[in-house]
Amino acid sequence: MTTQVKTMSLITAPPTLPLIAPSILSSDFSNLGDECKAVLNGGADLLHLDVMDGYFVPNLTMGPALCNSLRATLPDVYLDVHLMVNKPLMYVQPFADAGASLFTTHVEAEDDPLEVADAVRAAGMDAGIAINPPTDVQEILPLIESFDLILVMSVNPGFSGQAFIPEVLTKVETISKQLRPDQRLQMDGGVSLKTCQACKDAGCDVLVAASAIFGADDYPAAIAGLRGH
Image (spheres, rainbow, N blue to C red):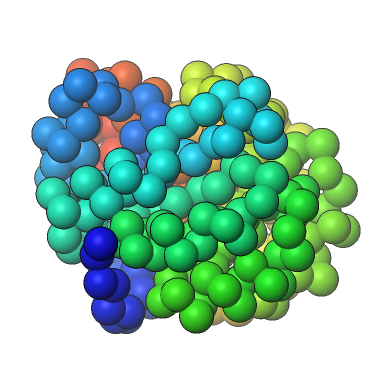
């Protein structure tokens, strides 16, 4: 079990923006530690872990044990854990114990998002909330004050490699107007060199990219391209 000590957050006090978060869902799991080290050495700011329960989305992926392994291998990395699960409350303490830095729940999940946020902070993590493409932005607006990060999904969650849904950019523009300086706005899904500028122009300052990074031959070049310099 990992004992987590809360320090100044990369999310609430970023050294620079935008932040680039490779999604390890597209990494080579047989070589995961080295792949994660390579993208971090190539300029990535944090790692994004997609957790799926097979019910909220039609896929089943990683859990606390993998998060714990990454924390042991990369003790200083910010681990951004995105929970695509029906009942996120039951996973708060296991991921806190595993060393997660950020715990993002979905507005569409069964548990009360504000209750999840309180539990996440009590466990020593930053709190995020996500919204899927079909969900009306009005569902999330009353909640964003209580979270450190807002995640707008630009694909229907479940699998990496899907095409970007440009219509979600209107949600980003609406949400960005309500955020404090210490809150971040994240885009996840289909983020690439072709779509990243539109995300940033709409107000996103954390970009999650999966195949656009792990599918590239040159990690530093891919990360620099997404960042814009």
